[in-house]
Structures are given as C-alpha cells and as structure tokens.
Amino acid sequence: MQENNATRGFAEVVGKIPAPGLVLGGVCGIQFGAAFAPQVYPQVGAAGVVFLRLLIAGVLLCLLWRPRRQALHSVKGAWGTVIGAGALLAGHHLAFYEAVNHIPLGAVATIEFLGPFAIALAGSRRAVDLVPACLAAGGVLLLSGGGVPLEAGGLTLAAVAACCWAGYILVSSRMARRLSGGQGLALAVLWAALLSAPYGIAHAGRALLDPHVLWVAAVVAVASSVLPYSCNLEALRRIPPRVFGVLTSLEPAVGALFGLLILGQRLAWPQWLGIAAVACASVAATFLRAGERSSARGRSRREDRAARSADRQLCRELRSK
Image (cartoon, rainbow, N blue to C red; front, side, top):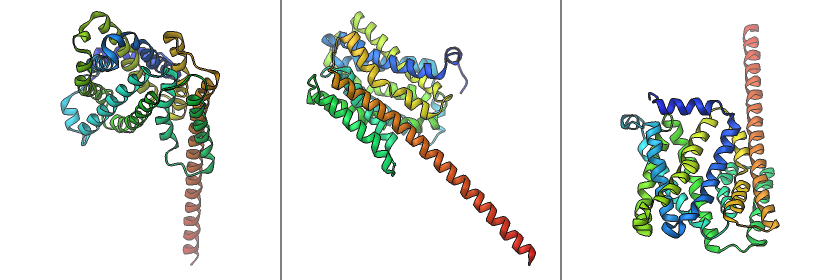
C-alpha cells in the first residue's frame, strides 16, 4: 500500500518518540478518554458515547490509513478477521463504558486487564506459572472485597469487557500479520461503530447531535482510539512483546489515578493494593514467559548441536569402514 501524506507525517512524528513513551502515552490516552467520557453520560449515556467514539475514530483511521478493497480481497480470510475484530471491539467498548457508569474506573481497568493477563498465562504447564495467577486472584479479591463496595452488575460488565478484549487481541494479531499498516484496524473500528449504532441511537436519539456531546466524543475518540492504537502499532515494531507487556501492566493503576483526579472516584487502600497486585502479576507472567521462551531456544540449540555432532560421528565411522 502506498503511504499518503498523513500517514508519512504521523510516522515521522512517532518515529522521534522512544517506544516506551509511545506505549505509556497510549495507556494514559485510553484511561483519560474513559475518565473524560462520563461527563456526557446524562445526555447520551454510555451507549451514545461508544457509538460516537467508534464512528469518529473509524472515520479518522480510514482517512489516515486509506484501506483498499482490493488489498483485502487479495488476502484469504481478511474480511472475516476484520469483521470478527470489529464485533469484539464493539462488545468490549459497550461493556467497558457501561461498567464505568457503575463502579470506579480503576476497578474496571483492573478487571478488564485480566483478559490480556489470561492470554499471557495461556498454555503454561509449569508450576511456577501459578505464582502470578495466584497473585492476580488475590488482587481481585482485595479489589472487590476491601473498602468501597462494588456493584455486581459493574463487575459483570467489566468481566465481559475482559473477555471481549482478550478475543480482540487474538483476532487483531492475526489481522496485523495479514494486512499491512493499519488498514485492518481502520475497517474494524468502522465496523464496530456500525454495530453499536442501533444501540447508541436508540438510547441517545437527537442528543447525539449536541455540539458539546460531539466535542467530548471527538476528544475521547482521538485520545482513546486513534492515538493509542496507532502508537501501539508502531511501538510493537520497535520493542519486544515482553517490554510492551510490562509497560501496559501500568494500565490498572493509571485508570485508578485518572478516576481519582477527573471523576473523584476514591478507593480504599486494600483496593489500591489489589490493583498493584494485578499489575505485579502481569509483570511476573511476562518475565516468566520470556524465560520459558529463552529456555526453549536454548534447548533447541543444544539439540541441534547434538544432532550435528551425531551426524559428524556417523560420517567418520562410515569413512573409516
């Protein structure tokens, strides 16, 4: 795909920013948008905010990446992957923003983060991998049982968001491998907007056209979707997934901080401790998986050397005969 001026300009700007700065900026943008959106909940509700956020973000991403229909037709399964990613994205956004309407943002971000955390632990067969799992479980217990009461409905919505986010990560990784640039991302976000349109319009109606609502939705779309998704895409090209995982582990704490500063949502100290436990569990899981991969590579190299040595020994024996 040939880059347009907007894409080249964006690449030049983010190219000057260190990769960890891109990831941390994306984390802050996502949580800032989630904390900024509730100011228009009385007018359009979470459903209206989600619809406008996805619509604005989808349009901006399409203008940035200029997806081509022939590019998707040329890749087998591309359309199915984009449609699946968009459906999971719509479900995640609706569940996440509805959850923020019931329980503090820090709690929502922590429960939602269990989705990527489960992916990090998936496939592990070692006993040591139970350590971060137990640490995360303890953090969730502290979060849900210590201090500020959390509604069961909000916790359920946050759990749905975690499941959808985990599914989106798996599907979008396949999409990133099959499609160049952000073409798939742009179309997936636009499809998510179309899926959320009936729900958002039914709940908000003509209030969606209010200038103040549109302005807030535009800020949320840019801060929480366009910039973070694009920055993460660039960061993953420059840093290993292990480092990316460690940096994104700060997301629950950042969510709790923005919830306190913008929404005035206070948590008790056991709940802050629970958030820290989940973040530490994610860091531990990331390093354990990195160590497992390093050990596997080491075993593979040793096996290759042993096989080559056996081949040389066999050749010597054949020559001697």
